[in-house]
Length: 234
Image 1: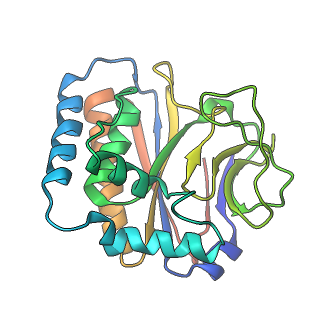
Image 2 (image 1 turned 180 degrees about the vertical axis):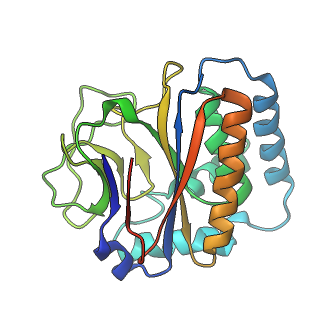
């Protein structure tokens, strides 16, 4: 299985980088009470921050990227922006399962979009690219509903089935590849846009990989995707 970011994405957004944490043989059904405590602590810290957290350059960079794609970030908020808005508004994030909690923690701590997908459902290769509009997307929690991305929208998809795993780059994950307690093999994406540097992104990925191994077992590996290294073999 190949994982690739299309060159056109880097050409259009030269400040973009992606780190991918691949984890195998993990136990996502474990009870990890300390993880929920960590998530709630990050939420409390965010609510206590002075000023407007949405003015953080790490977040405004994503809102500007969405506007460049003619996506209104108020209607289509980047995932990290949505998390920050929700937490700042006093709503706790749901504790879905340990893996989801781990990348939500990473997103809040580093203020970067994070999302993961169950690799067992992949039938072809994984790609981040501009959509043709023929791809299929099934919203999370609505497996019978189908949508099609706009032509030119950045999507993350399975090239074999044409199923979009995440619409609008890092807006909303789909139902097909959702992470469940039974999930044992995942690819978790951590996205950085300048001013987030590649070393910053790699450090966030390393912390997440260590947390996965410590709390859920299994094996992890980290891949960095850049204009010079756009793909890797899974």
